[in-house]
Length: 91
Image (tube, rainbow, N blue to C red; front, side):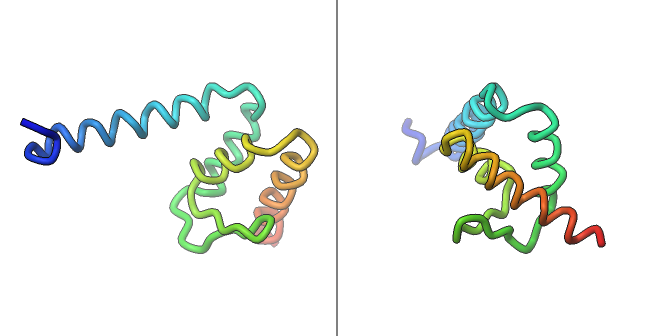
């Protein structure tokens, strides 16, 4: 029986893949714990994407993956843009 024939096996495979990706992002040492917490708070139940470097981010996972793909200085700049979005919405 293949995963195409058994939807339960297919669903478990998807959940396992997502868990592995999330664990890799969580374990990456380049994002500090406060940065991860702020990103999770920012992207929790978001319905309007945040634009950074002409890219739209709607989920924590997408934002974290993008930040981790950048070198140190551009990462800090992109994080600052995301953080500024939080400050703008608080006013």
